[in-house]
Amino acid sequence: MARQQVEGCEAVLLTEEDISRVIEMAWEDRTPFEAIQLQFGLNQDGVIKLMRAQLKSSSFKLWRARTHGQKTKHLKLRSSQVVRHQSKEHNKANRV
Image (cartoon, rainbow, N blue to C red):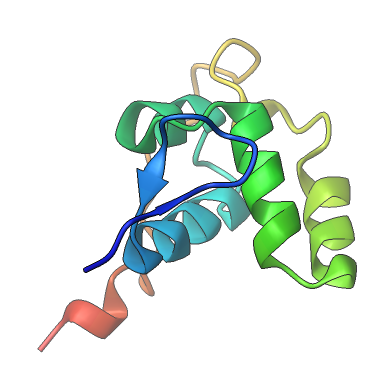
């Protein structure tokens, strides 16, 4: 699988599968930006750049409006009552 550099993010090479997973994680309400950074090396600005490059303009605007100021997307702001959540749809494509 070929890796490609994410525009605006130096030294971050992701496969198409990685990019797809980052987008999925970014849309999830309970997945903090820090988890994406830990797994893929993209900080919040990198995720925003990736989303802007990969999504249609209208989808990007919806996502930004949804995540802007959302406390669950930042570990330091989230309540201790928010625990890890995995949707029923998670990795549905990989199940047999």
